[in-house]
Length: 252
Length: 251
Image 1: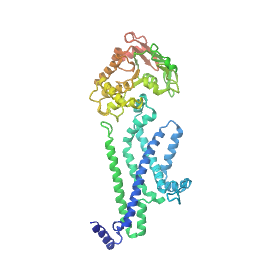
Image 2: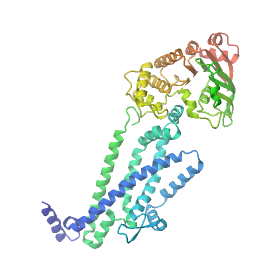
Image 3: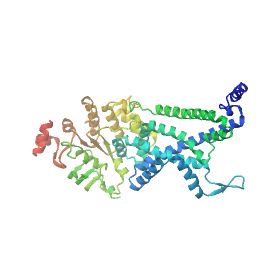
């Protein structure tokens, strides 16, 4: 069965030289794709989680009584939202990377930077998407009536308790559709980590088609399908979540 | 702490010469009143006369510019005010109920005792169920606020406030947003409370109810107390022309 499958694509490559699905009939190329996919998944999951955490904390800080805290958050948003993530990646890795200390690698011999390129990609992309998440959660928070928070405060809740127990759960529900969009974008933006040589799916794909120009279009098609699949999982999970959080008699 | 000096022969709420402005608009222009433990007082008056602002100052939802508000001897007009301590003593019910929409009726009631007072959830649940019964909402424990009528939501809000075991209850026009047919069920719940000896401060437009339930009625207009007295004398022998005009319009 598998033999017939690989044979089909080998024959296809022979008959039509521009359609060499090399990863389907050469195990070494397949291994590259698998490795790329693993990195893309790790990058996506880490960035989704961290960017949501950044969004939650940032939105909380934005409602701080201190004007300086609010200004810092505002400055952060302006910077990360209004500059290209590609340049952010380069800047984080090359400019900031030189200040992080090096540590001895497990081989006891080589010196490696404390934060790897994957580490920097996670940091940089999380802050990038986090800036949008702050704004998304802020709009959700603004949809929670002041009077509801006042009721919590009259019951003795502190500002943090009110945020955690009342504001956030309500704001989250309002924010989910917009958050969904941003996270979909984030998963796709992980391909830009190619800028700092993170061996994710695009990086591996480019490597393959540099080695085998005949595999260029097939690899692009594989990229499309991989992302349709990955984003599909995310969207499915998010809509399940949205449904689970629906409150009877409240909102849409 | 000096607040321990309070004993219940002194006013439980003592308001002295309170001034409050929103920007350049002065809403309270020197209000004073004393409320004794177990007393029910009603504050009435035209819209914008500062009634709601006044009771919101009692639990520090609004701050005041000058004057003094003491709750069981604790000064509210104090920048180092221990708000939690104050809010344990003072419960409040709002015009718009303000229930937590993502929690069931029972959870709404249980939340503050568990999160704020750190009480044992099992004990809290037992008491919450008793409170549900007290406001006659058995069977609605697991309903979300969006599934309840206005009157039912307001009764949950009363139970939620009572779950904190307050000494004083503030009611801010709690029937103003209700359909006429559900007003009564909320008033009955308040009346039960008053009869149990709870100290209550109500801002209300329900004159008949005020007359029936209040020990003392205050009439405010443009930020001052124009006239006050027990219901019998207040409604029948009002002296100030402003009070008489207001009563003639409303009764």
